[in-house]
Length: 574
Image 1 (tube, rainbow, N blue to C red):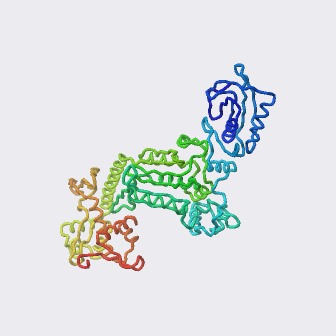
Image 2 (cartoon, rainbow, N blue to C red):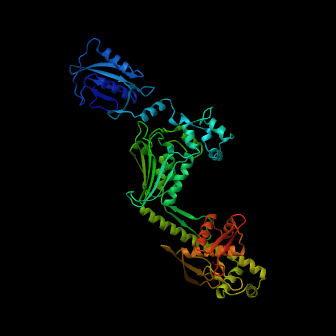
Image 3 (cartoon, rainbow, N blue to C red):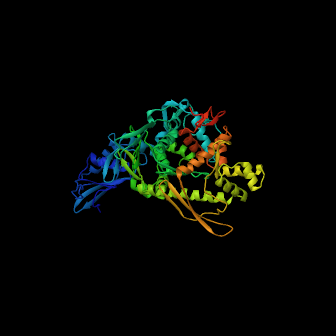
């Protein structure tokens, strides 16, 4: 029975000609198929006249005009009193097959003329190899950055591998070069020492949504291993990150516009699966409402975007050697699972799923900035800060001893009180006063403003000896944080409601004041020591120090090792 129309495995021809042979070659380079000779394009049976040797002559013509030679199976049928001939071929095991020096492959219901790159890919796939395994005639092991190789080996060993060879031995054992020191294309691109055009990635940050007015641009021509960080650094430079800092929080809260792990996965896919034989460059565009990642290289034969999104496909890395090294380094976990992880990460972050499309001989991935989600993230971040502040104060109050509470109450009533006067009023030794004051300063509850002789004390929170805790009412709006606290009187059982209003800037300012006091007491104090004393993360300390330096309140004298801090006051300014 004749099919109703042409498809991936069916072609109609009214008579025998070179077009029949083209169809057979296209089927042999795809999944096989049948050419119906004697059937018009619309499926109408027109029939053919056959002589005694006609079919044998057709077969010989097919055999002589194809390389490697293909010989179709033949079937002769009668349809409505007319003769048709069926030429059938299976998928050929050694590809590609040509007809008169040209190569075709069946796509849907037509025969596609293969490009030089597609011919090469088909040949490599037949041999279960890829382009990056072939020898690069222009480069040797002397062209590699062996320090980068050593760093990559260390990363592999941290993942549980046991590579004891030197960088040169590893390169040879991994098959990245031959015995004569000639590199493979993959080996050179992975670890090359000098920049060149082969790996160019164009990076652009645009002011407008149409991508016309560029604000910043860069170009990476480094090794593939280094390019991952090159691209990620450019991305992080030009997308927003909210940093929520709480005085006693060990780790700061960070909120990025996009999920960075998913962006990194997209970048890795770009670099690993790029067609490095193509003249086009990879391109990354950062626009106000989205990011675009373009990569030269079409999807493998028989694979389309729908297959990618459904996850029903067998992964076929374009550059198997390159992919294998990245997999050893732990940069990719499993072939074919990257897209699924990217989509999942965006959905979990509250964004819409990224979009993939084939365009201009390559693949474009577009990720969108969800402005609604961005607003929600700000609200969430503010809520996190609100809870941090509430919990910090609650924990600090719980840790206070009766004497420490008395010290704070006396300082609150007289901020010029001396340690001797505190000792006399509370009835404990001066040494114990000093120890308690040190504890209160380290926990950010009091600070010393000015010098020992002419300065005064400041209680950083309105806390009294009757403070016992906080209620759950906390309102956060824009940069202003209002914490409404209810404090009970332990002895009488009465409650006193009071509102402590703070701003993020004031909170940061108090933290900075504490840091300045530590520096005044010890100009050679290190950042890790400040982190330990304040309870901040090292990054939080660095951020606060940068703010102090940028506002002209702090400077560094001498090198990092051997130098010291200097607090800038009105007396020593200028």
